[in-house]
Image (cartoon, rainbow, N blue to C red):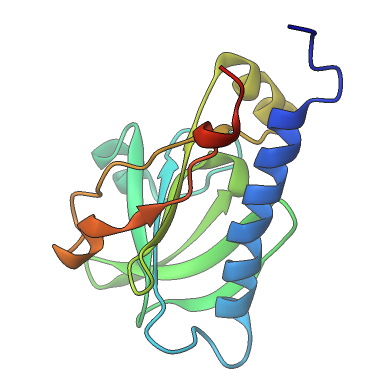
Length: 162
């Protein structure tokens, strides 16, 4: 098989990150989240560019899942990251999460999810600011409801040559 000189995996990941970014932009609009949409977003807590309170990074040394549903404020979406204010233990805290740090995105209202795997090459790109990890089937989140576990996950494996 010939080497992929175009970088199709990277192009696909950029496109999938665009789906997450566009959904977040809708949530950040003046109308907010439409209907019953809400997001579970899992991210690597020590990834470059992640800004969370110290007590959260100590409590969640690898990954953390946040939920954007009813109680979030001042959501701002940028090309490479988003910023939002969430309450933890009753106290509001701004957090910043680069899209490259996101490992899972799930909207249980429509049973849509994406999962991204982090590879060493992606880690190097993340430090330089242009990473997009590869996608894989998404296992159920610990916090999701029984109905959400039956979700259909977008997986690109069916389209890849073996």
